[in-house]
Image (cartoon, rainbow, N blue to C red):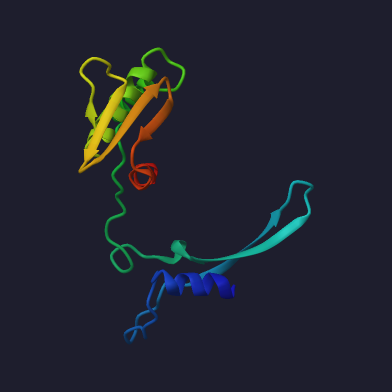
Length: 152
């Protein structure tokens, strides 16, 4: 119970105040749960502080209870977009390569015109080459520090 109260305090979930005269605040209660391990032995006890929402009165404790929800059509479209690049599908590697190209160019790498799997980065006298082979990367260059920075 102490850890729950500490967590609520550190996350600034609520602020304790004195209620105005004649106002009855919404109550709360503790809910307890035993956490079980793989062989059904008790591994931990948990406590959660919850408001007694059933005591609320419209116009007194709340006004609207509307929560916007995504349309089913929107969810299906989003899932179709995600499924387009699922690992193992024929187009997944092309999607991965397109995204990799966008990201690596953001780090000042330039794609080789003759071989689209080779990128080059020049920084002063330091040069780094990055080569893609399926989903592996070979990184070579003449400056160990620069190569370390690229890897990080």
